[in-house]
Amino acid sequence: MLVQLVRPLVRTQVQMLTQAQSASGKLVGMVSQWLGYLGIHAEVTQLKTAGDRIQVSLCVGKPEQCTEAEWQKILGNLNQDPSTAIETDALTYLALPPGQQSKVQRLLAAILQASGQDPLADWATLRPRLAAMGLSEAMLEGVHSALKVSMPMELLVEQLEPEVAAFVLSKAIHIALLDQQISTAEDTALKALLNAVDRPAVA
Image 1: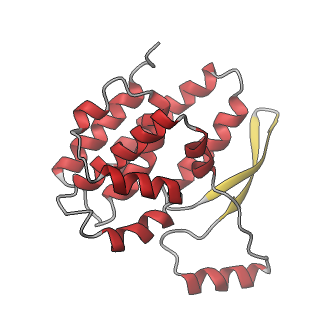
Image 2: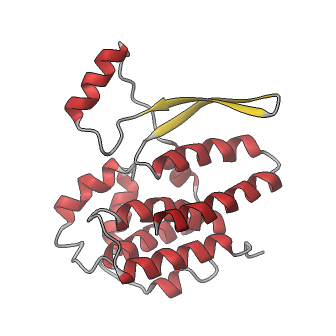
Image 3: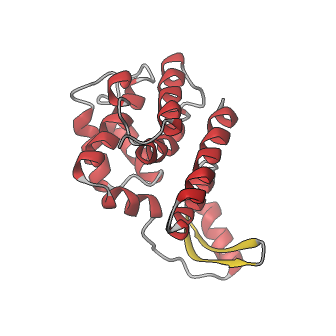
């Protein structure tokens, strides 16, 4: 299921790069997003072409499957100083217009509700796990508010911008896999987002 979702998304993003006047900024965000599918938080610090290849420098944070003790051991072994960098996803979210930020919040809330659990009742447990995925404080507050007024996914994805859908899909996959399985409702919601990614942008 995860491969089926990610490969078409990457293909769509490749097509976006071929059409972008400034492909560098888009690729920076995409590299971080692709690594995010593996649970790795990374920020691109340098990107340049070298012949028929692209050279990328990364600043990588603790993977989701790595404990804090393991991460500190790795940092010690590499003799690196820990750094605190703002995540590319957070910057992308903050750069969105308020209307699109609201869409992101409602869509993520719909994914949480598709799990079949009560995300409001479990919010104290969910919140730190969502924060570990890179959701900013502002995004978390917005999602929490959106959970109080549920909306069906089919309405939320109507006329949804492909780039917003791609941003949400990268987070939605992680959210759906929080319990290590994808329910029928989550599968339907993820496919609706994927269809929105593939859909031409509304003029």
